[in-house]
Image (cartoon, rainbow, N blue to C red; front, side, top):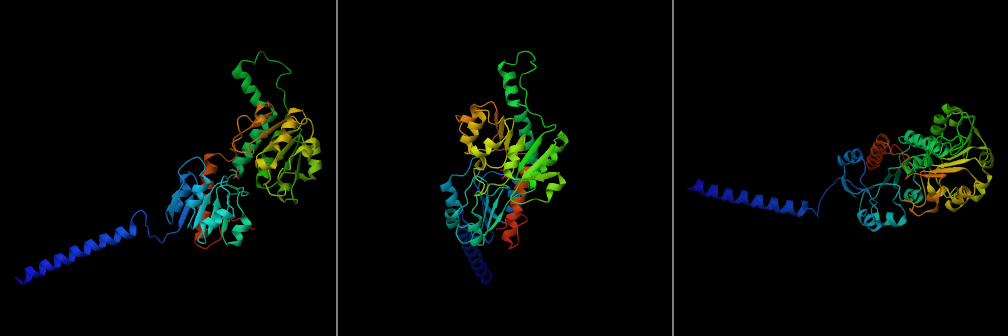
Length: 357
Ligand code: DGY
């Protein structure tokens, strides 16, 4: 009798404990009230999975699951209270965003080598580490720069159109002649990682001289036999003018009417840096009046360039949709490095590639 009473009592206790455990679990772990000690990271786009997988091991991830940019208001909402932000060059990281993120934010890592979209001074003031992805995209970007140069100089766009639209006709000695690299002078504005890699890839084409202009002379110039000259000298003497530098407030719009008017008539201008380096109205004028021979742009303002933009009417202007780093290898490595930058900062360490202010 006694043991039956004890059994009934024990049953009540077990049921009570199980109900209360369920109650606590529901309150604390429902989808709206996730209590987690793991840091939270917001990822602003669908990105190569490798980076997300790395972060998922130690962080709670929320993500804008689209190939199109996250609308600004959604970004501002979703960044609130996050410990880290994984962003792209399409997101402006400014005071407004940092205010909305709040004081927990410790890391902003962009999946790009360029970080002109981030207010790095403001981040530094708030002790927020900023990461970027140099080196891992250098080969891909240099390769595309050379491809664009060749496509523009050898008039591939016009050739492909002629094949398609039937204007090809018979072989003509004077048709679609362009500029060759053999014996040419190449001027590189910005002989950094990418500029140097471009110079190396151009040497086997038999270029005669490589000139460069930077804020200061660079060590890597010796490796590629490049000569430091003033910007004016570079513009005046180069058959190919390549813009490979990072965009800053100081050099914004550097390639304007004054610059194009100093270039040779046969000059080919290539930009794989940022659209902001170029005054596009001035470029249109230079290309349509024969001031320069051609231009190849992988970057424009804005992006995408409206389909009715005047530059798109020109045969001597080749425009690509910002694809310089677009190889699988490079984009995977960029995603991985972005994740490693975030992980390091969240552990209180210096990022593998941290912007120094
Ligand atoms: C960059 O990384 O800054 C390029 O523009 C895109 O890869």
